[in-house]
Image 1 (spheres, rainbow, N blue to C red):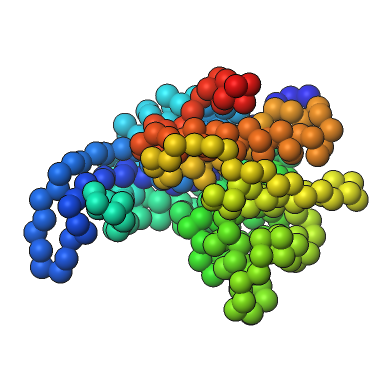
Image 2 (image 1 turned 180 degrees about the vertical axis):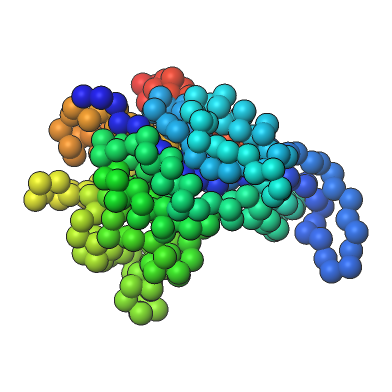
Length: 319
């Protein structure tokens, strides 16, 4: 069978991080102790994880002239960047991040920039090159995300959705009845539950998964990352359904920025790579691989830079 292509229609950010003795107060001019500038954004990070884990991944998006270096960086991770175009007028999306040296607390100013220039029209042009054997991956950091998802579903692509950052409006904006695999953390799933049911209680993860699966009967599966409690997932295939619980992989935690993004990319990559295996075995192996990849990523600083290679993940799995 031909290897499925993954089209990641996702955000591309420039992250500027200032290490500060405390978070800046009103009226204060504060001297920063450290400064780093990196390529980031959930979209870019997830493409990096797909590229480094060997998927046939294409990133589609829009960058400013100030971010052509980020496009090059994404390409260096093994990602096809044919469908990243440069907007001559708009500045790239940016995050200005203060990190307190003592507490690790942060505060972030986000400028959407080119991430707010994505359109369904552009998506339709790109989708000419993809079809029913392929997957689209989306997050919630770009404009017209729902219309882009609908356009992809209309072309027969399978949909994997990571609704992050999560807002209550996701339920109305995105055609969730087209989503094949939903990747969420516990907070995101809880917001979905509140929006779907109108209730305000906080059910346990198992209940959240069950309710979301019942609400969207076409969904193949939900993967819910639970931080220190590992991963919970539920998948269904040909009338059978199976729940998976993967304990957290041991890690010396330094920076969790890209853990979720690493997980998404490695999961989808492994899921597609093992398409010949028994369905539930394939899901379980992909969860285990993604879990270890995410654990390695938290041991290093940075977002895209912290994503491991497939060989590193395999070495850790065999250890």
